[in-house]
Length: 125
Image (cartoon, rainbow, N blue to C red):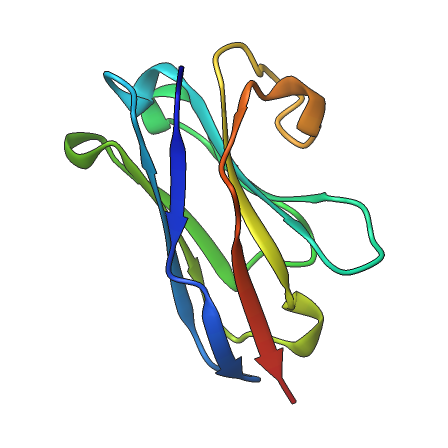
């Protein structure tokens, strides 16, 4: 069973930055598409960013493009999400996810197999 543990969430002012981390209990994260989704109160869980198997490609939601950066550390089996220029509307629980056969539907939460418990990000105005 794959376990994903997120860390790095917190309270930050608008315009600030945070770095989220996701530690995966797998042999190598390069065998998985790794992603981040977020869910705000009263809203559905939405795609934020993903990195393909072997880290060859990265994908972002339009709402975070240019502000967030996803990266993988294969040596530590950890995926990071750097959040910059944060806005109050970025407030949500951020979830790490992993999928073996995601393919082109990296934005679809149903394509992923494993999920972390989430970490809260709160951006104050």
